[in-house]
Length: 376
Ligand code: NDP
Image (cartoon, rainbow, N blue to C red):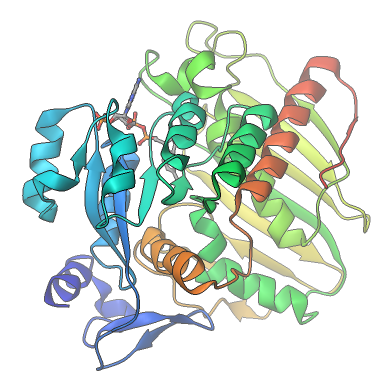
């Protein structure tokens, strides 16, 4: 618990008033603080891919109560050495991309978390499913709905539970807005907007390679507005329209790699969403939900935290964690080990729905047509 406390203090949690006593979980959007150490089941996780996001999740796991980092799969021995020192990972829990199916025979690992580029989600998750361990894949689950469905089917066939790294689905301020919406605080929901983006750099990175990313900003950033619209409005869309303005840099943003897309979605209740996904503008990170009686706003909405937000009644009250991935991992441990049901689903089927919407956004851009959606 000491390292956890040090970690929280390093993150400057004093303002959140949870730096003195151990946090043993999260309930009703607030940290549960207890002097009794947590003694329930702990999910022992092996991370796959020591990249930007793998490092973030590994750091967040240091503060997790119900999950811990015990193993690693990587193609880069120097990074592995660093992680072994930093996180105390024993040699017997280290794997590479040729032998990670051997995790099947490792009783010290419960779950495998894939933080590799998008094109490797499908082949690696399907191989990982053969181990019989719990699986977490990063978003987007696949480069398109077909690939995402193949992952879901493969995991089902192997009898393993699959979750997708949708960290926002556990974020307390998002959940506070959903609770207020359910209580009728905003009245009938009419409108949602989700704007997300940043200016992307290095033109040689996999995110700007259609084969490796599956597309451009929509796969990386637009997906937050896609699933955000679904959980904020509380419905699945029935149609999509979309537009792509001319690209600013045709070398960086080649055919099939979108720089900026505006997309709209219509919901069965008549609510509409109007969203922006971009690799061309910095500091774009906002959700706005509007009903007949009021609104809720998050800005920032999808950053790693803490988020800020308000409604027409005042500031949101839920305590935003310093790193959402800590709550995500605690909650995912609860789903895997205790059969808990999340408020907003994070399973493969949810990710297939998002992939179908993104496929439809690309089709709408290409054809200029309104694309009907049938998500279930
Ligand atoms: P990076 O490129 O920073 O890291 C990916 C890592 O995957 C590499 O460092 C490498 O680790 C491993 N890898 C294995 N094979 C390859 C290959 N052929 N090419 C490149 N890397 C390879 O990517 P990110 O960490 O930014 O993204 C990884 C995934 O996480 C993506 O799917 C992305 O969408 C998702 N993501 C999710 C976020 C969220 O908030 N939920 C935020 C950011 C990313 P090694 O050297 O150890 O083998």
